Length: 302
Image (cartoon, rainbow, N blue to C red; front, side):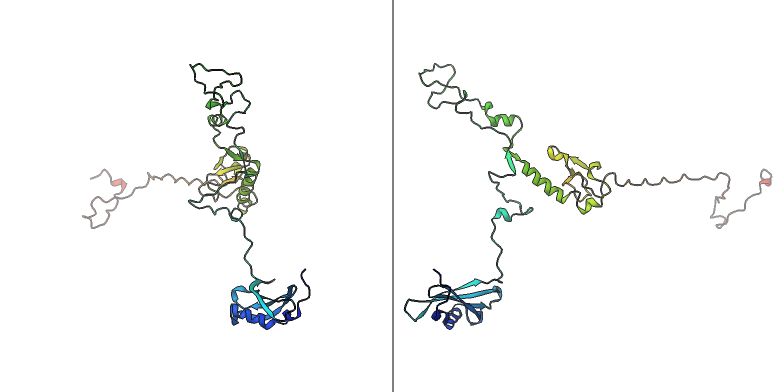
């Protein structure tokens, strides 16, 4: 049983413990004495502050001991331990819990667990027929070949192999169900929460939008159950272009938010047919002067 009271001789061996710490780390790395703690019968650990800047809050722990009925204190071990105020690295997490959205880069492969709760089988059933089915193949029987006589025994009867088109995978391929797994209700819910958080009605852009995406002409509908609440933005000037947006989302690029004003049509030119504008025929002969107009009463008289 661990002794609560430190052994007197071991507790008094402070200088022995300090010398061991200095020998292990150097005189500049060992600081003031912190205290002693009993680890067992005649086993005491002395602690000294660590002066290394990179290990703030750590301490040098030197364990000393002595044999029974012996007054000679000997060194057990010297280690560097973290104190209550020590700077420690965060707790290790597996890569699957450290991975964040956007961490996947070109060439990276992200394995998916076989029992991922976000996925569920795309179709149900097995590739092989049940053992007691009439289509089950009996390994003990001879292979059935059309046109040949087959010996029938009392206990085994040759059975025609199950056709390939009868397999569940072949039926799934024929129906277009080529994905072995699809999103489960949990996967759909998690995806909807992410998309609504980024492009939903609670965002600052949607709060200041003149209208929601429900009435926007740039919204591209999507199928499935998610189509009742989400769509894809097709406006190249929108911050959500090419993103899955909530129907309650909105931005300033709404198709019906503002109508571009029609440019004004220029006025028709005005032709004044009553005024007479003099036009010199030979400005070079008159020195650039314009001949005076002839009075109207002199026209027609020579």
